[in-house]
Length: 382
Image 1 (tube, rainbow, N blue to C red):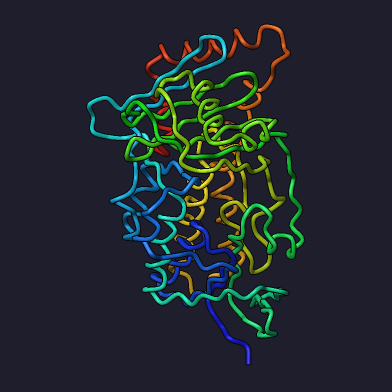
Image 2 (cartoon, rainbow, N blue to C red):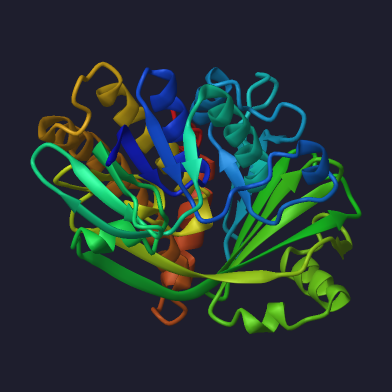
């Protein structure tokens, strides 16, 4: 006998978990599928720091807080941002004495643990079985699990990442633009206090970001065409290399984790919807991480889709899915194009006059209060 749910979600990362929690609390019956069930042992997770760090905008911090999953005891407010070009250009954002913040730095696994605790308490059904098949008709979508069981639902939600299996099964083509860069991430303790400031350097076609963490620590993301120059270093050499690239602004560094790398690719699916199917998060879009906006876009997907589905009797109705696609198109494309353009502007090392132009541009914005305020509001998700 086919089991029935209102929604079946593939992918239990931050975006998929948030989607499951919101839908379940709105009265829908939700099944969440992920091959790996994350730890919800907060005490154990607090013994070390995750190298996957996200910059959560104030808008999404408020959203997560409204769900009761915001990790109040383990986050770092960012009140200042210092961005430096490769030839003297510089722009600084500072909330000053307003008491506000640009964003919060949060660990992936710690926030994920809060989300999973909440969704399990809400009654979301979870399963770690592999999905081996899917089909849909006008009224229902169906998946087949590895044990042969068939699950029916009004809607399949793909939150299964950049290499989405569900997207592939639905036959949705993807325009993929490799940056020929990898993002290298690692955590460090710092000699000097970071004072809640995030730093970013554009140098020699590469981008390095220092993301502040509590307890005088930072996480770094280094966008580079040669990741092995970092991942093959021992801890001491890695710390020295990162400190030098960061102009010693926080003094000497002490590695707190190994460095690992992930490929950077801009992905734009042909569509984010199909019959009885919708894509969210990295399954629906990826961006260059230089602005730290990937997960914020994903949470934006969740809020948009939830607002459309919560009052609906048939959550897989085509008109709802087309509204979601239309409402998310502009904010997603705007962020993708902004990050892509900024990366390409600083990645080009050969065009004559370009270094002067981009660094002059940074300095000009830094001395134009209105434009600077608009950029700061954009970075805050306002």
